[in-house]
Image (cartoon, rainbow, N blue to C red):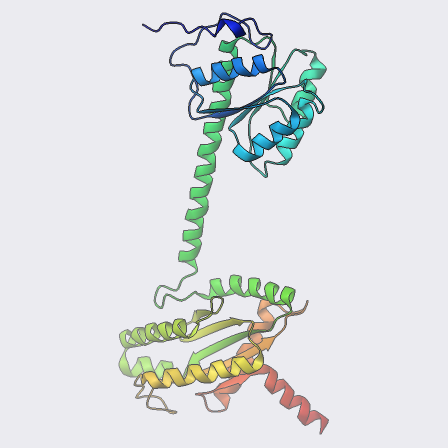
Length: 355
């Protein structure tokens, strides 16, 4: 049998809480931290006593607006019990400042006041309060309000947790959707998203960026002569090679489609792009992947088109891909097993025109 617990006689009869109310076993609160703001020490003590007796894990006490804000920002309590009449700045002011400092979070605020007009209630809600209790408040009523707020808090926590889980699931799904299952490289869909982001970054930072489109030379005849299983093995090996050469954090290799690959190299000028391309061609040759049906080498080779620019307002994904693709076409037309720069081609055409 539970024995009723009576508040200490020294604080019974306070105008903050009505006296003589007992704690109801099993109907308390739990896992909740409360900030009590009241300028009367006896009221704060009695409320803190009832809160601790009912299962609150922490109770913070403030006697004015400034200390209330300081404690709120330091401890981020789960609930605030706020008196309206405070020395200096009133409770309405405190509530507005609390709401401004939450940054998207939500902390229930219950006003405690002897003011009970409709206007007082309206002003309390307008300033950011969630409920309003008129003093003297019976502890059993206060506990009922706190349990209601705790249910709302628990529901919000579950929703936040579910939202976080959904975000993580969406991120995993997007990752799966943007990964080529054969090579493990980012696919064309991922290229479009990342390229858009890097164009914005390069435009903002006024830094050069390079896009390469690459094509394995005579890969159709590779499949025809060695079979598609060997062709898949070859694509996997090339995918690993491209991942290996992308050593900087923002360098990304993509499988553009079939035997076509792409490389995105942020903060890479034209000279650096050509150096990278030559190194890539040499690395592939050193792998000595046999290609008996190639007309340019006994081993697998690669051709590539390069475009490098500092993006302006007219630069978009389509224009960059078109330039790289045009340079790739030129590399193939000039004999394959080489890389060609769109911008260098344009410079050469301009020089010929001015002669």
